[in-house]
Structures are given as C-alpha cells and as structure tokens.
Length: 326
Length: 273
Ligand SMILES: Nc1ncnc2c1ncn2[C@@H]1O[C@H](COP(=O)(O)OP(=O)(O)O)[C@@H](O)[C@H]1O
Ligand code: SF4
Ligand SMILES: [Mg+2]
Image (cartoon, rainbow over all chains, first blue to last red; front, top):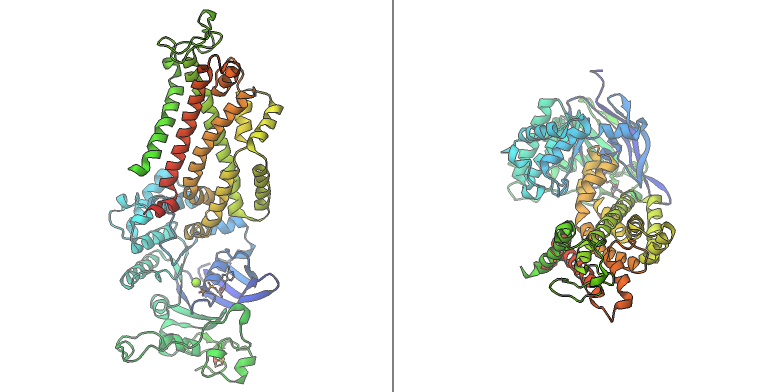
C-alpha cells in the first residue's frame, strides 16, 4: 500500500445542529496527505480548521457531526470503525497537539507519568518499562536532565518545556500522523521557532506526516510542502507552499500573504501598516450566498454573489475556487 | 501558623481517637465485657476507676477505650462507602451527562429530601441491629453531598484542556475519569469525607442510643449513653465520659475537615492570599 495516501478526505461536510435546523459548518472539504508528508491548513480564526481536525480523529461531538463525505485513514473509512477501533487510532497512529500547553497537561500528575501512560495504554507496556521509555521520550524532545524532569509537575515547567512534553506525549507511540492545531500560538516568538523546528525534525526522522493548522500562513508555509487555505468552511485554494507565496491565486490567499510582515519590506520597516483583510469571517448561520468571501472581496462581481465557484485546476498544480482568480 | 490551628488540633484529636482504638487492649484496665463485679457497682471516678463503674461494676474507662473501636470503625467504614458511592455516581453523571445524569440527579434529590438518619433507621428496621447493619445503613444514606460535589467538579473539569487532550490521545472514559478527573477533585471530596465521618460517629451514637446499634454488652459510645439513661442523675459519669469521647472525636473531625478545606480548596486558598 506504499502508493496509497495516509489520509484521504473526500467531500467532507460537517453539520452544526442548532436545535431547529442543520447548517453546514464546513463543506466540500477534500484533501489527501501522503505518508511522511507535511500538509498545512490555513485560515483566520473561525474558518473551520479545528472542527475539520476533530472530524479526522472521530471526535466531533454534539452539536457538530459528520454530515456526509468520506475520511479514509490508511485505506479504512474512519466513520465505519467501531468506537473502540477509533479510540485505538487516537494517540497511537494519529496524535494531536494543541494550542494551550498551559492547560493540556494534567496539573496533578508528574509529566513522566503522563508520557508513560501512553505506552501503557497503547503499547501494553508495564509501568516499569513505560517509565523508562518516558525518560527516553523526554530526552528525544531535548529536555535537559530528563531523568529528573519526569518527576516534575506541569506547573514547574515553562510554556516551551510544556509544549515539548506535549510533543513527547504525542510522538510517544510513533504515530503515522501528527495533527498540530495552532501548536505555538500561545508561546513567545523565539520559543515558537524552537518548537516548530523540533517538531519538524522529529517527524522527518520518524517519517511521521504532519497536518499543521494555523492562522499564520508564514508559519505553515515554512513547515509544510503543501498548503490548503480555508475560508468560512470551504477550501478556497490548495497549492505547493512555495507557489502560494510567489503567486497567490485566490483573493483571500492574496490578503493573507499581504498581511504577513516580510523581511526587508516597507511594512517590516514600520513605514506602512500591515494590510489587514477588512471585515470578519461570517458566522456559520450567516454565510453569504455564492462565494462566501464576496462581502470582503475587492474583485467581487454579480456572479460572486449568486454562484458558488467550482474548483479550477491550475497548470502549475493545485486548485483554486474563485470566479476571477489570478 | 495560626490559620493551621484547626488542622493541627483536629488532626491530633482524630489521631488520638484512632490510637486509643488501636491500642485498646493495652490501654484498658479490665476486659470491657467480662469483668463485671457487682461488688464494685456504680463507683464514682477515682484513682482506681478513672471514669467510674457502671451498675454491673464494669470499668467505664475500659469500655470507653474499647468503644473507640466500634465508633471509629462505623465512622470510617460507612463514610468510605458513602464516598465511593457518591464519587462513582457523581463523577460519571457529570462526565457522561444525558439520561444517566438525570437518573443520578433524581436519586440525589430523593436522598437529600429524606433526612439520612430517618432513612438509616428504616434500613436498620429491615436489617435488624448489629455492626454490619449499621455500616450498611449509614454507608448507603449519606453520599448525596459527595455526589453533588463530584458531579459539579466533573462538569467543570471535563472541558479542561487536559481532559480533552486525554480524549484525543485515545484514553477511554474510565481511564479519563480515574486519571484526569478524580485526582483533580480529590480535595473537596476528602473535606466532605472528613466531615461525613464526624456525622457518622454521631449517627452511630444516635442509632445505638435508640437500641438499634451494636448489641449490648459490647460497648459503643452510643450504646453506653443509652444504657446510662436511667442513671443520669444518680451516676452522671456513666453518660459524661462516652459523651465526651463522642464530642471530642466529632469536634476533631470537624476541625480537621475545616483545616483540610483551607489547604485543599483553591478558592478559599486564594481568598486568603
Ligand atoms: N462545539 C461547537 N458548537 C457550535 N459551534 C461550534 C463548535 N465548535 C466550533 N464551532 C463553530 O464552528 C466554526 C469553526 O470553528 P473552528 O473549527 O474552531 O475554527 P478555527 O478555524 O478557528 O479552528 C466557528 O464558527 C465556530 O463558532
Ligand atoms: S469568487 Fe468573486 S468574491 Fe469570491 S474570491 Fe473570487 S472574486 Fe472574490
Ligand atoms: Mg482552531
């Protein structure tokens, strides 16, 4: 099965049940990630990135649910697996780290124990072996003096150290896919770079694929080979990350690129304010007809307000959904 | 240090009561049941009979010392049963929610509506008097506060990042409840358990006083009080010393519970700083 993708999402729709009716919080989501590949999901807050990630690991809970579409992991449809089989995938073959390293660790349990628990839970190790493996796992994320650190409680560690522990936990069982949902948003900029570097190196060494989720296009393009841009529950553009910077095709992507501070640019020198995209992401219950970006788009015409743009495949590879794309 | 006075005094009183119970065979002067001697009947407290003797000439001091065993066993064991029931029901109800939560809530409301001593009385009436019946009756009737607290804690804890993280890492429900939720709610549960032990000691006394507790001639503080009823004016020491033992033990447990709350409950902790 070497040629088959690790994860394949086809026309996924996520429903939000607000009591009286079902609305699509995300729809037409399709992408694939190969083994060992790095794939990014970018978009402003509220675009549906996190719920897409939750759908992948079978953890959408009321009022959200999978409306239609297929998610295949390693050739098997996730929705058709039993609850137990889904649970056995989580943490074992698909791991996830979150934005909040402050709260993602149990405050009353030593960090070593929390790492060791993964080996006990998924690999059937004894606590003795697991504790030994936890020291090694902590060493692998470059925590100094790991044999002493395993006894520390989360509050004794800095934010960066805690995120390292989270990475150690996530990678403990050697997963095939690591989902990183805004993994460094809560950290200092310098620590951010270290953590990203560490995550990328470890995954590259072990052949772990990464699905990196962030509002920060710069960060994602830096880590990932390919990037999908999400807006209001739809993927509007999917490209190689080099292309997306050089020649963003969708006006929304264009806006994201323009809002990034670039080294040497006038914005970075402080003469010009960074260009923000005017307006906000619409609420799910309030999605506009046609292209959902139309109220914020400078190029919008009549057709944009009534017809949903379909995917155009670009010559250089990748696709875009816009009536008037570059 | 002043703030911890309740913890120290309460802990000391409770530890003393346990020590007395454990060391009863060495501390007691006579056998609490067998050493009756009508020649010594109703002696007031003296150097020979520290707490006096009863109408059968049994040494009250020795009986109070042995009584600690029964009173504390009932207090500790019945409260443990209550804590386990309360935590199991409340934690699972708060975490799972849904119909199970409704069931547990209804059950808790019933328990809260009926005074627990009345409920225990009814169970004792069915089971008959005796130590085992006492443990069952008191162990099944005082879990509602623990249940309430466990449920409320589980409700607020289940949205914590580390609980969600555990779900994402493939923890099963039971593992989440035991490793993520339980340790984080232990503080208030222990506080309530300590206070509950005090009230169980009182309930034991009350039930034994009504003749439903431990069968005579074995001494429990409550049954000693019950026996002493008729002689309260003629031989007050018969009721004073077991009464004092109950008072000091319950006082100790309440102080201990308060003290533990001060150090374990983050809210009262932050209020002080
Ligand atoms: N549990 C939920 N109940 C209702 N709406 C939700 C829930 N979770 C997310 N949403 C909505 O779904 C949309 C997408 O959310 P999310 O995936 O978290 O966005 P992001 O791209 O910032 O990760 C948002 O509009 C959010 O309000
Ligand atoms: S379809 Fe129209 S509104 Fe949407 S992004 Fe393209 S130009 Fe703008
Ligand atoms: Mg998010």
